Length: 261
Image (spheres, helix red, strand yellow):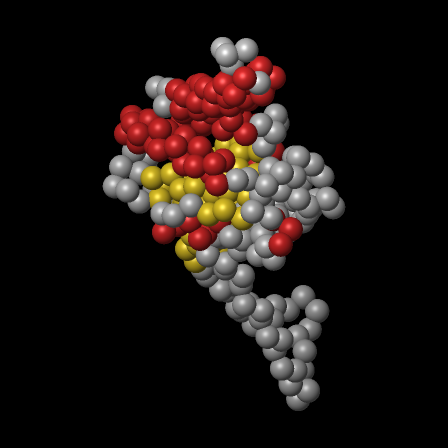
């Protein structure tokens, strides 16, 4: 009996098992984090390969969850043409006879464009891949909450149901539970190149401070690879002005393909 602390074998055994379980849980968590960081920091030749590595790292730690990557762009959008006012009818002027041409028609107003800052969604962990985010572009200065990270700081929305400014690219889920986290991705100059977004709407759980700390570490490991891949991409000429369709709440996707922003 003297071999056990306090001469109570069952108490000693319970304390030993509790300590061993805590050690095993801690070691497993550390091993999972190391594996996720290795995935996030894996060398890649293309952006898509790097995106996939980031998603694998996020899901390794936080599954079930959804992850998305968007890049910052400035796009040109065609402005609506002004409505032409109807010409006043002069009752004293005889209408032209049949077959005679009226006065020369007024040429249409020239097409005008405006520049819009958007986050263009380029990758997702969704099984449908790019098809699930086709056409998604967020005017982050006027829609949603993701624009808050454009100053370089991450954003956590613990409960998406309680955030009225959340933007939905598809029909808002009827069972709205879960958290939303956005972390900026930086370019070689330290400016915001894009955003990694993660949500837990699939199972509705709340992300903890420990969860967001892990995501911050994933981005810190992934960012140097992103900069390296971007440096390998040859510069492309400026595209012609294009019209971009900016999705509004409830537009365009089937239920189950929801994404918050």
